[in-house]
Length: 166
View 1 (cartoon, rainbow, N blue to C red):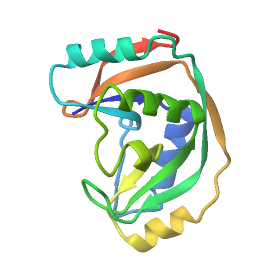
View 2 (view 1 turned 135 degrees about the vertical axis):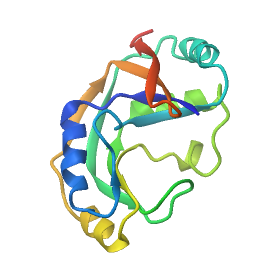
View 3 (view 1 turned 90 degrees about the horizontal axis):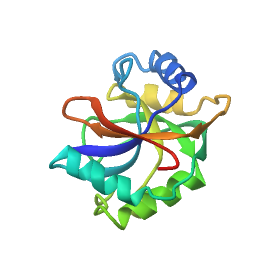
View 4 (view 1 turned 90 degrees about the vertical axis):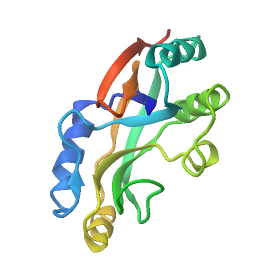
């Protein structure tokens, strides 16, 4: 599966890694695994998907994002649960997601109206630990997305990056 991601800044990845210690039985994201999915692109030829993304990104300017807190999905559409995550607010990200849903079919139950921008802290473990962590407050972290990455989830690597504006 390929996706278009916003690479989170080191302040966000450090926070996520630090918080993961509070859900000891969960699988925490490792260094380099933290991502913020803008839109899932599907399977297929990564180069062709990246070319379609480039066309769709025409005129997209850098946009602001903010980590606003911690939340969780008690059940997950795919994979292990619970999923505890950093909640991300960004009107620009949401607009881009909607734009890309017009080019790439939305994944049912997790995209379009169901899209929740987030950076995963950890998956699995004890629900009580995840709920406890989700009640904690964090200092907001603000940043500007100036580049986006086409991510190959099978190999855990970026296959193409785009600087904004494209």
